Image (cartoon, rainbow, N blue to C red; front, side, top):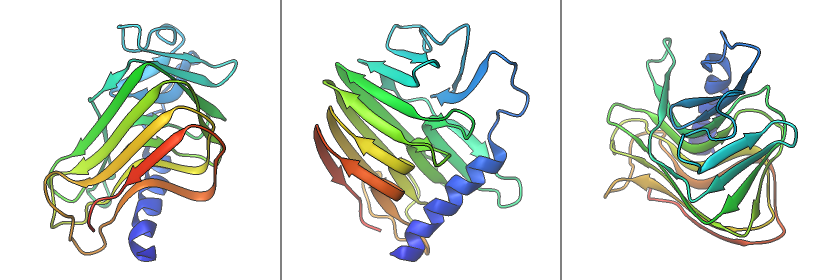
Length: 207
């Protein structure tokens, strides 16, 4: 199992090297919500429907009845693998606090072909925290049960859950993942995890 989890760690390290933030303008932020990059122009209404906003001065990313089903696929040209993410936070952002309001859902699906899938990924050692009184249902699923296809609903090096109701699931769509080296993890925290409030339910698929 340690080897399988390590494949996810390698995937996030790969993300750090190929993030599509190289040509950013000074007003852009290293955050992707679905397939939309956060900028100074859209930070108050990132998806255009009033459900997601980001305050760079406080590091608060507020989800208010958000439904995120689009994913950004980032390809590593050396390996050919594609990492699919619903929310991707880059190395240059710093601490991020995801504030939950209302009923929020994030669903990320990796297609067939040996891909990685992380519904929420924090690509640095800066803390990722969750707070608020709302709910978050987050899932990462693969359509490929045979190839290397590792999934994690939430990934961070350091994570603190302080409030909200979080339900995290990972696995294959309708079947187990049994590719060599594959893994399925609901919440993967590589260094430190603390839960001081809220409700957390984490369910991993077969792997």
